[in-house]
Amino acid sequence: MDIVIDDLAHSLVASLGSDPTSGRLLVGISGFPASGKSTIARAIAKRVNTLAGADIAVVVGLDGWHFSRAHLDTMPDPVLAHARRGAHWTFDGNGFVSFVRAVRDKPHATCRAPSFDHALKDPVAEDVEVQPEHRIVLFEGLYTFLDINPWREAGLLMHERWYIQVDEDEAARRLVRRHVQSGITPDAATALQRAIENDLPNGRFVREHLLAPTRTITSVMDAGLEI
Image 1 (cartoon, rainbow, N blue to C red):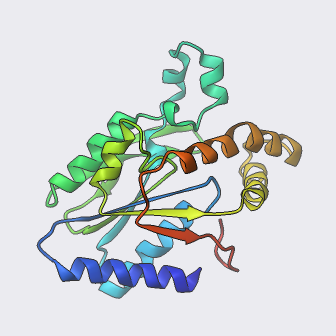
Image 2 (cartoon, one colour):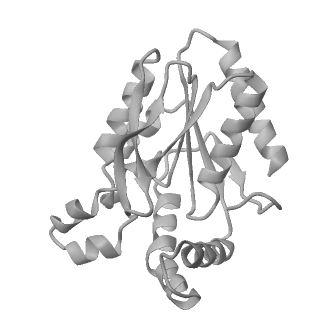
Image 3 (spheres, helix red, strand yellow):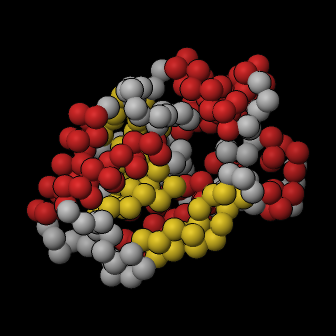
């Protein structure tokens, strides 16, 4: 992946340099669960900043727009909402669209996004800053450019839409390892069940309901690249 990340970083710097008056460059990064969206986004931002010699790139994760557990409790079927947390309807899609629009329409403003605290299992408001010096904003998450409303509006605001593809069996292996290591599930069997019942269906839904990607990237597990 190192070569791919380097190529993507160079392409973003070149795109920004070709039109320095165009404001911020917005990139949506989607893909199957455990395809490496956040890992790759962070690696690209780090490489861009190295190439530019300044912190011009920032990553904003979609996880901050999870509905809180308290909000899920108010849904018509709270049990289902908690069980399916991570499906597109358990996120604040309208809030995400509003933030993407602000980042694009106000290129000289500081825009604050929520983050997600995995210990608390809930979002933290205004925890991530897109500052005026951030000219490249990488939005990573499953639903960054779905072709259904309200997500579609955010996708159409992106200058680039990158989809990371990964074999489903490989995704399942990564998910099992991740769920056990993070403590989401107590053992591999429970982790696999969670992947089959929630993560993999979410990935198939994304694959079937995307705006056309501008680039498709194949996820490869490199040594030193933790996905």
